[in-house]
Amino acid sequence: MITATDKVGIVIVSHSAKVALGAAEMVAQMVGSDIPLAWTGGNSEGGLGTSVEQIIDAINAAWSEAGVAILVDLGGAETNSEMAIEMLPLERQDRVVICDAPVVEGAIMAATESWGGSDLDTVRRTAEEFGKKMD
Amino acid sequence: MDIHGSVQLVHAGGLHARPAVALTKLAKTFRAKILIAASAEGPWIDAKSVVKVMGMKTPAHSTLFFHALGDDARAAIEAMTRLVEEDFSGAPE
Image (cartoon, rainbow over all chains, first blue to last red; front, side, top):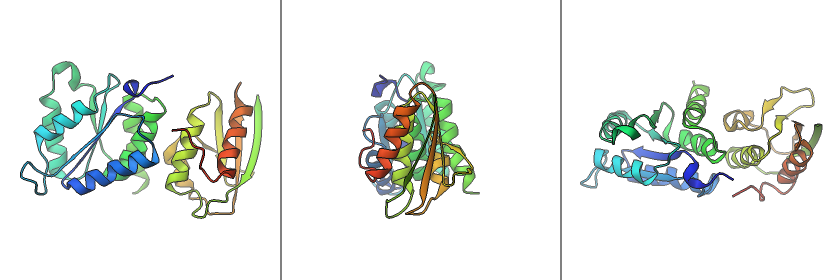
């Protein structure tokens, strides 16, 4: 049996705390709570934006030895997520990926794949496969 | 073991997001290769691929066809058809 800690963690990063929370709620309801899941949204002043520190905290909260897949919405969410990854301990950096997928849909696809015990690369590819179908 | 099965989709919204996730999760609990189609002639898609299952966009009251290959194929077909019959209430947590 695969336990939650063996499954790829999912981190949702949005400019809006409400969007991030809503996406996390959809994952929890549709896929379940048996995967490491964390979300962050908004800047440290409570406005729209993203915070490198909060993204690092979210990655650590969803940490799994299988790695962490991050779903982001727009520009700063991606660049700040890249910075957050660079500030992680070296041994963790290559086990965190940013998925090129829509944040809500990608989170559900990634979480479903993680739930089934897939590895980090498969989780990322599944989220990105959905994004490509939208083109 | 090579098992076929079919079941009518009763879910009001058809095979939309939540049922697609439930179906994929259940499929992933079996070792068998599980294929699903909205027609007996196919096209057959991998029931363990959440993206592909969601992409089927099967409307309500259509019939879903399953085909499973592997040592637990019979249990897989029974569980998959039961999930659809029970309107996706019995998905694994």
